[in-house]
Length: 573
Image 1 (cartoon, rainbow, N blue to C red):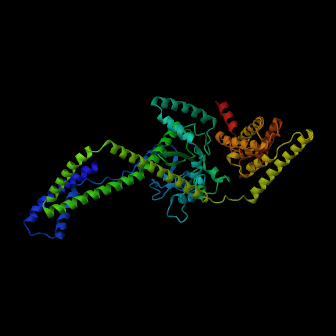
Image 2 (image 1 turned 135 degrees about the vertical axis):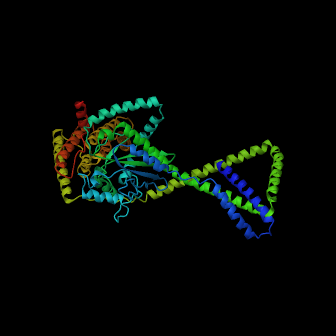
Image 3 (image 1 turned 90 degrees about the vertical axis):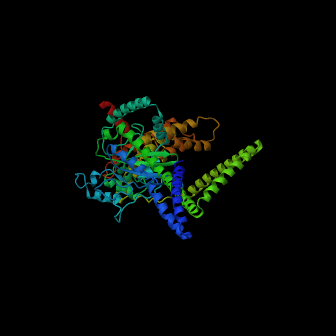
């Protein structure tokens, strides 16, 4: 409506000016077509001066990013968008707001330098400064751009893959609650946060916790991810770890299908109580949703700009044509056009009244068929896009090969595995001898366990919590399935891992050897006595892994004693 009125006012103004110009031209000799167009140009220029100015593009994304200045304890922000056509994550360049850094940080919005990369800070190291410049200075030859990445690869891929839809839904439900209810929920979560804060002992480096504790923020230790052999090697992830970006949290967003993730890089030297305070975390969540919506708005905004530009061009084109017509024919064209328009309206009135009920039914039926056809075409296009995306994804991503172990680390693995399985094999022989072969220690899944403990030491699947609880869940499920009558053993061998593997994922205790143990124990040949013996073998493997792995300066096992830390926190209360 606004565009139409603007165009109409401009046309009437120009036409009035051209009518006066027509009287001047009539007193002179008839101008040629070229001279008429020359007379139109100054008229159009005068009208253009009084035309409303074009709307400047409102940079909603920059305004949304400015809000993040209120977040406590962050170094930088990155924005990644999931491309539905390729199945990859693409970076949205945010630029740098650090005046000292200048035109750097094409993929990062830098709030401040990391302390490790600040030459004036005691934490600063030459290696950190070099890595920081690789990430932020696009003029360097060894600059590391934020290229597209696959889910699960690199820092954005890992954070994207880890996000649970239940967290997003829970956050959305809280936002939709009445204000009083939200305040009550905030108070409860604040109390839970206060208790969990004391239980964690205030560790500054590498802390992370469950995302439901403080508004859905899960801080990950970037150094651990970079040093984890279970992760595909990513040069940019390594640079983040070296440059001092030691903490990262990903917050997903979904704006009507425009999906992605906002990554916050936290300051590991900041006060963890303030960084993880529910108010700070809740603000980070909401700011991420606003940033995602602002990024989603860029496409429609460019489209509406192009549309308005086209409408304005059409309006001024009509003004020019009608001005030429007035100058040539003295306004007769306008009169004739008005008469024809009135005549067409008069002629259409009887035809509209003459439309029968059957004709309207035909029109409705035709409209329904067109809608159904359009829906079918959309479904076909969606299926085609899914197949195309699947074909691209099965061709593999661009992840590099993880680095191999040094001979020294391989020797540590050899010593650990050799000692552990020597003990387990000897215990198995003793059990078989004492029970006359009726009982035994199942060794095959324990071989998979020691592979994790000595080759993927920092991986979550290797930790004692996952090993113990996942095995309990898997063995219990497999043995209980053997009590179901009329179930063939071959089917139990398929049903047991089908239940155990997604069950471990849901419980957050993923442990690959437990899937193998579920298959072994589902055969029906093993009883509850074997259950206890096998768990004893798991405990022995954990004890030897703790003793041997920690003799190496390059290894840390376990990464945390979850229940021990929790018990210490309760005792300290």
